[in-house]
Length: 203
Image 1 (tube, rainbow, N blue to C red):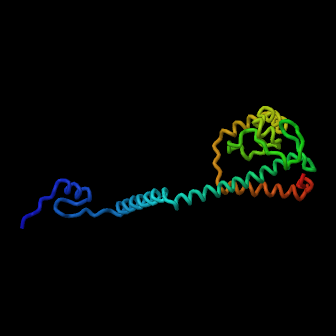
Image 2: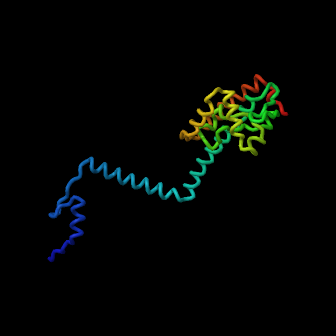
Image 3: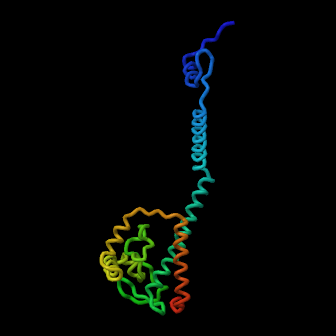
């Protein structure tokens, strides 16, 4: 019987698999078996994630999570904005624009930001938002300088700088965070409704 010659590449693979040249095998330890299994499990998980990422199902999952977060954020802003405008109105629901002193019912006014609402860290800070007419808020860029002066008068010297510093901080809110904000300000609006019902009457 002629023995078949083993190639050098085959020998290298045998060595890397723990086999000796005389055909015996090196028994792996328990730790080596566990480590190898963990590595295989990790590869499987990564492959599943990679495959799911570009599938319609993966896209639907990501879209659903993002949609839930956006809805929660919109609800948080709805109740926060309502609270701010009610806070700044009188017993009959009339409020003055923080930057031009124009007077109107709070329902026709905006909740205008001093620091742009693009900054998440100050988006829901009560000091940063005031009742403001649509003309100032939407068509005159919020009148930053006048708003800054009003904040200093209302909340004390240095408040505007505090808000500017805070705006630079990293702030990442989850869906639960927005739900908490919505629930908090909804309760505050309901409290105003119960104690100052004239404010909630239509203009």
